[in-house]
Length: 169
Image (cartoon, rainbow, N blue to C red; front, top):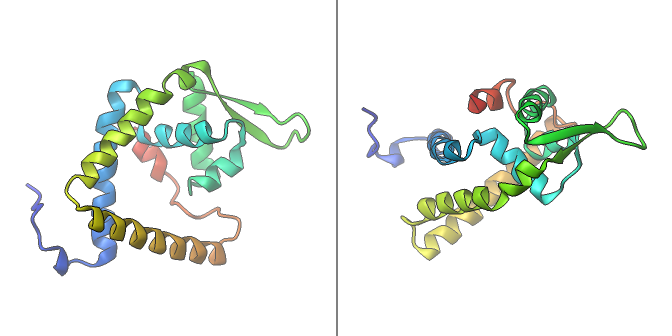
């Protein structure tokens, strides 16, 4: 059994964030499975609900996944009827990703699932703690994003190959 009460002060910040991230991912998988989605698919759909018709490479960059990972996940999503991929009319090198009616119909149920998880995550925090946590994580995210851009301006190595595919299974 995992010792969930281990003293967080004895862990590094990176280690604790990684553990929390894995737990959040597990909770999300548990919540998305009943509606027929995998975690990575849910993240892609949320991005497309914000901007349907995104270029596939821009979608990969927005989600901090490698282009091959995006391609593999999008192929499965296309096969399962969640998205359609089409060449851009003005630039045939660009592949655009569009939601299907099936994906559009699932939007509110999926959004509700994400909101429920957010409520679960924040229920143990006071309003002030939530504000501090959000501000702190945003600051760390900004720093790491900037550092990654400096190392890899094209955004091609922001995730290890296979990271999202593992989540997708």
